[in-house]
Image 1 (cartoon, rainbow, N blue to C red):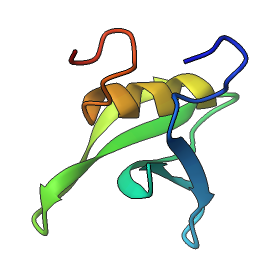
Image 2: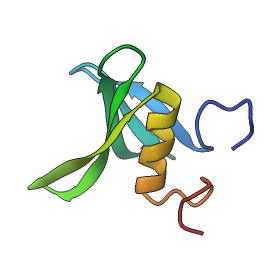
Image 3: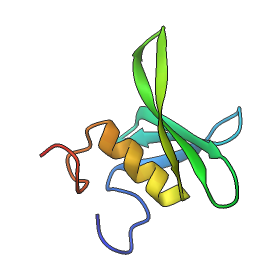
Length: 83
């Protein structure tokens, strides 16, 4: 991730019809964020099936929320993620 890039390479946000944003990695849905308090966003990583919609990763600034979802989803280029 270049220092001026707000999100990891290949990761984009798409406004959700339910509010908040879906987080996609090269066009694949990997999680979502929605506003919490102040400048914090609740971050969720997408689950594995119908009965597992996703898990709360935590509350972060918007850019960090997206980065943490990418790490949890296994994005290989994020520091702290799988190699």
